[in-house]
Length: 258
Ligand SMILES: Nc1ncnc2c1ncn2[C@@H]1O[C@H](COP(=O)(O)OP(=O)(O)OP(=O)(O)O)[C@@H](O)[C@H]1O
Ligand SMILES: [Mg+2]
Image (cartoon, rainbow, N blue to C red; front, side, top):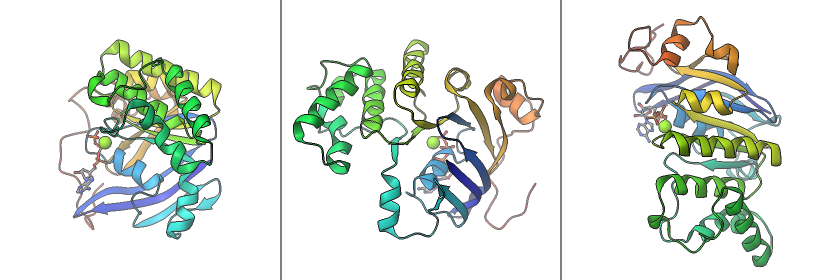
């Protein structure tokens, strides 16, 4: 279980995270929605220890990670897989080598086993037989699926996905969503999916949260969230420019605003 309490993080003079509190339960698909620039990627990076919060607490399976040593953090990071925004594959490595990368670094499996597992994960995302290709020769949808296979290949307990379906056509989006659902059935993984795509959230999430102004201002079971009376949620779900969420400047560090 991931327990986040009152996490704050400023970058330069912007208060990006302003007191985030959230529980993510084992086995669930949690979707975090939020407009561009609200701090979704920053939040994920804080969760996995790639960025250190200014204050607050993040417990992973009961273990506090805020303020712990690099060595201890590395151990906790092994529980995580991450699909970065845009997929971020290694361009000079083949598809197969991309999927093998984490396993080589984090497991003591034999080269044969690593190669066999990489093939299995590629098959699971519908990409059997493309292992020899370089990422530049793949479509965006295929690259995302490779990134997915790479994120799950180390069989982490938690996977963080940063905008897994942004920029994809609706059919490819549905293929990726289908893979999420399959993954959860096959490998008991807990997923945190960051997106601004409502349809992705509706299809894959057990619970949905909305990040706004540095805080989780709503979180609920998917069906209830989509019907929420909150004017913020309603505006976001409907994709309307009318409502309390505006294009205002972000709160500056040390500025009080509510
Ligand atoms: N490395 C950085 N240096 C300076 N500012 C940063 C950095 N990373 C994030 N920010 C700022 O922090 C804020 C939140 O950024 P973040 O990338 O987390 O937003 P986001 O919700 O993921 O947006 P998007 O949906 O566009 O990916 C933005 O104002 C951004 O400019
Ligand atoms: Mg982002």
